[in-house]
Every structure is written in C-alpha cells, then in structure tokens.
Length: 445
Image 1 (tube, rainbow, N blue to C red):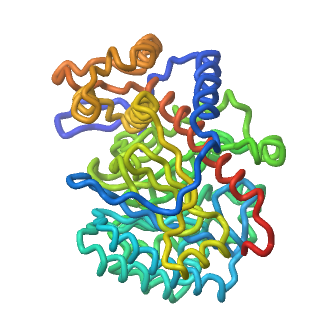
Image 2: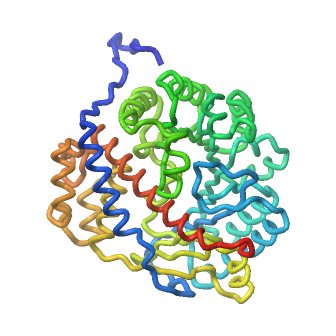
C-alpha cells in the first residue's frame, strides 16, 4: 500500500498509524493479571458426567466437530491430535456422525458448524460425508467453516469439499522459508512460494478463504512480517488472521528459547500489522481481518455464546457450564458404541466468572456493549465489572461511543490489550488440553 493515496476528491489520505501508547510495564502487568485469572478459572477441578443437557428454547447454538489427526506434529502446537492412521481415522469419522445423531436426538439445532483439528482434511471423502450428514440432520446450518494445512490444497480429493465448505482457513503461519525451516514446516508443507501457489489455485473452491499467519517468532524481522503481509495481500483472500505465537506451560521450556521472540517485540509487530491491513480489510477481532464486517471467522465463541462439541477432545459451553469430551480415542469409540455421547467432565461457572469471560470477548472482538450485559445478565456493566471497566478506561483501552451511549469503542490500545488477554486465555486452554492428554497411553490411540 502506498504511503500516501490520492482520493477522487484530490484530498491526501494518510496511511493508518496505529495509536498504541500502552507502555511495556503495563502490558507485562496485564499479562500477569490474565495469567492469574486463567489459572484460577481454567483449573481441572471438574466433576464427572456422562450426558449433555438438552437445548434451551430460544437460544442459538453452533456445532463444533474435532478431527484429532495429523500427518505430522508441529512442535509449537498443543491442540489435541494424534499421528494419522487411516483405519483409526475412518472408524473415528463413523463414530463422529453417530454422535451428531445423538445431539439431534437431544433436540439440538445449529445455525453454524466449525470443524477443527488436528488436520480436518486428512480424509477428504470422510470429511465431505460428515458435512453432508450434518447438513441433513441440521438443515438450519447456514455456514460451514473448516481448517486445513497447505499440503492438502494440492490433493485432487480436496475438490470434494467444494460446495460443502463455505469458509476454508489455511494454516500458512509464514511465507518466509527461514521461519518455515525453523518451525519444521519447510520439509512438511513446502516453501512459501509453493504455499502461495496452492492457495491461489484453491481460491475458486470456496466463498471465503482465510490465510492464517503467526507473528512473534524469533528472528522474524519487520521485513519478514511485511513480506508475509504483502504475500497474503497479493492472494486477496476474504480474510487474513494474524495470531501471536502462543507459548503454553507445556511448551515453554521446549520451544520458548528456540522459537519465541523477546516479549517486548510484540507491540511493534502488532502495530505494523494494524498499519498494513487497516484500510484493506475491516477488523473482525484483535487479530482477524475481513473484506466485510459481518462474516464468520475462527473465533466462533464471539458469535455464539453457546456451542456443542462432538468428537474426542472437544469442549462445549452450555448453560454457563463447560463440558469436556474424552481425550482417549479408545474411550471415545467405546462410548459411541454404547449409545452415549463422548462427554465425561463438566464445570459450572458462576455469574461473575461468565461476565468476565464475556468482557474479555467484548474487548477482543471490539464489540463491548452495555446493552449486551443488560439483556443477557440484567446488570449495569459499569458497576457489575467496575474494576475491569475502570482499569480499561485508565489505560485508554475503551471510550464511550459519542453516537450510542450503550456501546463502547475499543481503541488501538484496547485492541492490543484484547489480543494479549485472548492470547493468555487460549494459552490457558492449551494447558488444559495438554494436561488432559498427559495420562493417555499408547492403548488410548
């Protein structure tokens, strides 16, 4: 994007300059506060359960389906996944479709479906069959979102997903071959140019293509980040997502010194991302950018307060309660064979904890609303979460909307803090996943 653009009215339009003024010490303090709340609220103090609740009339729900298989395992990833075996994967997809039927039998209907992994496209024919099954069971599904890695884009079988997937998210991470080599992705998925060419060829298959990039790698200079953003822009996808590298307790010792950049570089890198993408894209969340401002994206928890997860290792959030499915593939198959859903743990959250979670999502998405808290919790946001609101105002993260007093404007400082808080939240969720996977034995595959 040129440094100065001449408009039709001959007025000079200056490029966007992100106004991030939060000092590093304040960011570090906020990070410690978030770590405290994450450790407090994402502890594994669940109780056992073997059933999901029935849906509540009038609520809208999203369906999440987890595919826990990958051909290769990335060192910085702590999502629930196993090395791919075709026989196990085919058995799993059959069980997954049966579990969807159980959700239907409970009375659930869904407006949207998100398929995550792992690598969702390890068996394109099974994935296509599963999406078709979901749309038959739940005709109200308007959008199906899916993830894939760059390697599968070149597969002839990938075309089976055309007409079934509305939004395909591609995990590029970086187009820079040096970063790809450092993260063990160069040999696995090919060069940045090869990935670029594959995405360009796949664009015609789906209404929405999303390009996932990661910043915060060691050695990822401003020039590398700008080159990644320029390459992504040349593809002209409907969406670009720029995740910060997330280091969990489980991966901190093994990869922090090898992969992660110094903490202080994050602000400058994020400022560069905002300056480059603002104007080309609308900001959907602190790290997601889209051509329009009303399309779905990876953080489905923003658009849907409640969601039901099917598959091994998936989570559900229903009636202020977190439900956790078994992480063992063996137990998963046994439960489905017995006619039971895969859920085995639950944790009920108190009203204040749920409101704090919604406040976090409001900051992250830029949709912080007093009206939302009145409608959903029957509270005054300014008094119910006084400390949270006061601290965000003091840091220049939020301000009142002069047009609509029920809405709050999340500033560039707020976007930075929202990104930081969501990063810590997701790192905490990754820690939970890692702890749930830790007791798994080889027989659990």
